Structure formats: structure tokens, C-alpha cells
Amino acid sequence: MTTIHEPGRRHGYTMLGDGAIRDYHAEVSFDKGRNGTRIQWSGRYHTTSYFIGAAYWLMLRSILGTFAKNLAKVAERRDMAMRSP
Image (cartoon, rainbow, N blue to C red):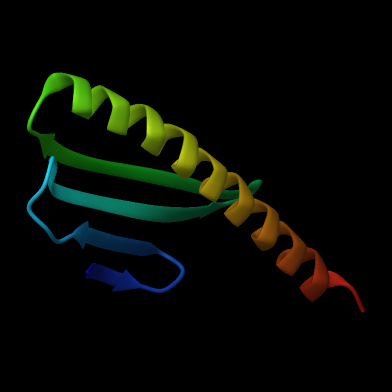
């Protein structure tokens, strides 16, 4: 479920459900600077066990890292397309 919607600035969301991962909340922010846009993705959650939490953290780190890299690539292509005549 979306919890924050500020296009071009921030996006927040939460996962609804009651399983091994609970109370998952995350936020992605985009800070425009002179040398590009900084993407920061942060979140928190509770788990039923330490091992589930560690495994979920590893999975999120991999998946969200890939999402962020792909997001940056798309943004760079879009920026280059807008600059070309």
C-alpha cells in the first residue's frame, strides 16, 4: 500500500499481511544535485525469527540494489533523450 506519494521526490509504501515478515515500511527518496540524482532506499520490518530476518535482508539488498541501478539507468536515458535536439 502506498503511504507517501510525492512524484519526483519521495515514495513510501508498506506491505500488508501477517506472516513471517511483519510491519514492513519503506521509503525511496530522490535528491537532485549538480552531478545527478541520489537515490536513497530505506525500510524496516519485524520478523518471527533472526534467521528469517537475515535471509530477508539479503534478498532485499540484492533485489532493491538491482531496482535502484535499473531506475538510475532509465533516468539517465530519459535525461539524455530530453537534452538531445
